[in-house]
Amino acid sequence: IAILLHPWSRVGGNAHDPVLLSFLSSFIRRDYHVITYNSRGVGNSSGSPTWTGFGEAEDLQKVVSLALQEIEEVEEIVLLGYSYGSLAVSMHPARPSALFSAANLARNRHVSPKLRIRHVLLSYPQGVLWLLSFFHSKRYDEALKELINSPGADVLVLYGEHDQFTKKEKYTTWANGLLDMTPIPNPKLQIEVVPEADHFWRSKSSTIRAARAIVENWL
View 1 (cartoon, rainbow, N blue to C red):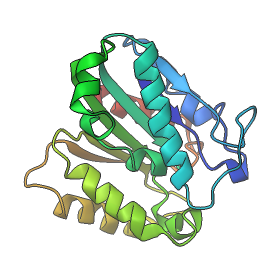
View 2 (view 1 turned 60 degrees about the vertical axis):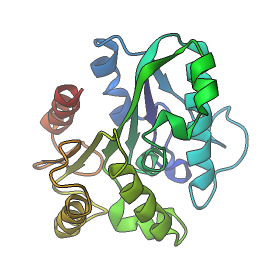
View 3 (view 1 turned 45 degrees about the vertical axis):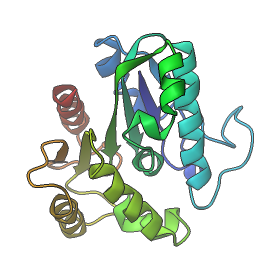
């Protein structure tokens, strides 16, 4: 299963985001069941967007649980979040046991005992995290640290060199900090920077192709 999460709904983000949809073929060609959905308050989704993003993170866990009830023999789930969507992805646990009790895992015929959950953080909005989380940046910092240090975690961090919301120097410092807080070495944390790419992946058509190639190689 691959679940793709869109950018901030308060500035128009929705499940039809062109950057997000550009990754569809990468998963479909590899026989993933692909799920995209409008977050709360977008399109026909009920409710209202939260200011902290915590509600959207809880919604993602519910989507994962529902998908596992409907799709059989799931051995892998890839969560790909773009921009604001990467915040919810970063808060999702890497271990299935964090979602289900051992008894429930054993009873659920749809869930393979080999199930693993992998994470892609595309254009993680580090430079404006304080704004998007309504000054709850620390909660996301702690969640990301817990994620990349979880047994079985497999995380790809991917961003553009010329992101409009996070300066290159800030991204570099942040990325180095992630590497410093992980077990040494940690081959399951991969950080990639695409030259000439911006936050919207529109500066050159080659940049989104480069991003897709990185994700496909990681898969």
